[in-house]
Length: 415
Image: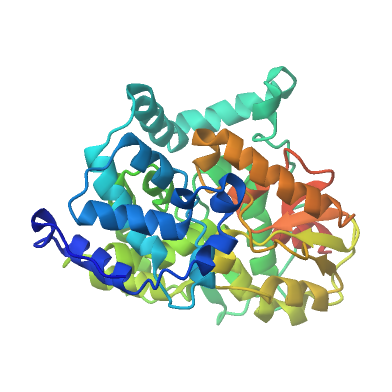
C-alpha cells in the first residue's frame, strides 16, 4: 500500500515507522475474516484493513474526526489479524502509533475523559482492593452486571506445607512471580496456585511487593507516559535481582502481563538509560505456560481430580496472538490426565474482554462474550479454563460452569 507522508509528519520517527508498516500491507483483506468487530458490525472501518486506511489518511494530511476515533477505539487489539496476515503486517505496532495521533487531536467527550482518568487511578490504587473486599462481602446487593466481575473465589491452596520434590536443594532456581495489580485483588488464588505449583516443582518463588502494574492498564487507556512510568518503576525494583544474577526467570500467570513485560524492550527501545535493562528483563520473562512442560513429570501421579477431568479451554488473545503460544497448555494438561476441549470454529476469536474494553464498549464486548460462552457451554465440560484474569472475570458472567485459571485447577488437584 503506497503512502505519502504529509509535511508535518515527515520529520517524525513514529510516523515514518507507521508509513513503513503500512507499505507492507497488500490490502488483501484476509484479516477481515478473523476480525471480531468486523464480523459483528460489518463495517469496513471496523476491520484491520479499514483502520489501516484510516491511519494512512491521517498520515497523508487528513483530519481525524470523532468518527475516526470511534472506529479506532472499537479495536479490541486482539492481534488476530497479525496471526492471519500473509504479509506479516505488525498491525499492533501500527495501531498504537495511529491511535496516539488521533487521541492527541480528538479528545472525546468530557465524560469519556473523566471516566478514563478515574479508571486508571482507581484500578491501580488501594481503593480498588478495598472496594473488591466490600464487594465480596456485600455481593448480594451488587447490580447483576457487576456481580460477575467480583468472583467469590476461595483459595486454591489447601495445603501450604507441600514440599518440593527437590526438598531443600540449594541449587534450586529462583523465580520472581509477578502478581499483577487487578488480579491480586480480584482473584488472589491464581497467584497462590502458581506459587504452590512452582514450589512443588522445585523453584524458589519470591515476590516484590512494591511491584506496580505492568503498564497494560494505562496503555489500554492511552496513557503512554503513565505506562512508561509503571515500566521504569518495575525495572528499578527488579534490576538489582537481575544484576546480582539471583533470578532464573520472571514469571507471570496472566498472559496479558506476560506479553506486556516481554514487550518492555520495544516500549523503551529508544531510551538510552533503560533500553538495555528492559531488553535483559524481557529476555528472562516467561508466561507460566512456558514453565508447565518442565513440571509435568513431577506432577504425574500426584493429582486427584476433585472437580472432574473435562476442561473447556479458552486461549486468551494475548497468549495465542500476542505471545504466539499455542497448544502448550492443552498438550501438557492432557499428559497429566485431563481431557481438554476447545471450540471447533472460533477458538481464535476474542471473548470481548480486552482489558478495559468491556467498560467502554459494553454491547460489543457482551455480544462477543455471549457467543463465546454459548460455544464453550456446548462442550459440556466440568470447568472452563483460561490463562488471563480479564478473560476469566469476563466469561464467568455467562458460564454454566466454573471459570478458572488452569493453574488453579492443578493446585486444587495436587495432593
